[in-house]
Image 1 (cartoon, rainbow, N blue to C red):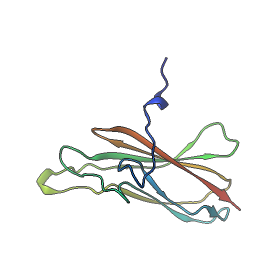
Image 2: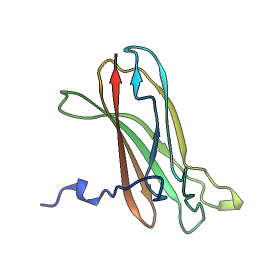
Image 3: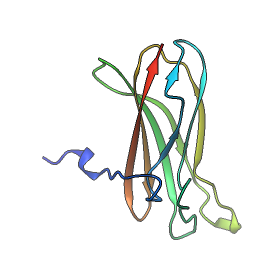
Image 4: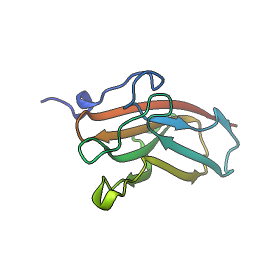
Length: 124
């Protein structure tokens, strides 16, 4: 049986317009709120048209030593040109962490499929 993870594509967000960009500090204080932002196309713009768009984002967190990741946020982008209205693919949430781990950003392009990026974060 083929695993779902085989569908995820990765790359350098500075050269590939589909790779989600994680905007988070490398180090945070345990129990203190910080902003966690996710975007697409920071260096190379992604089209946002009726035919080609980012449909959704998910932010996950996998604490060191934990068996499973935890979903932090989910963002759906529903306006893709209806009445000339477009939702720009950016998501922002506030988070408190207790343990170091890895943040995973997942995105879905209606033409080019699933994309993933990750960033380690240290909790002190």
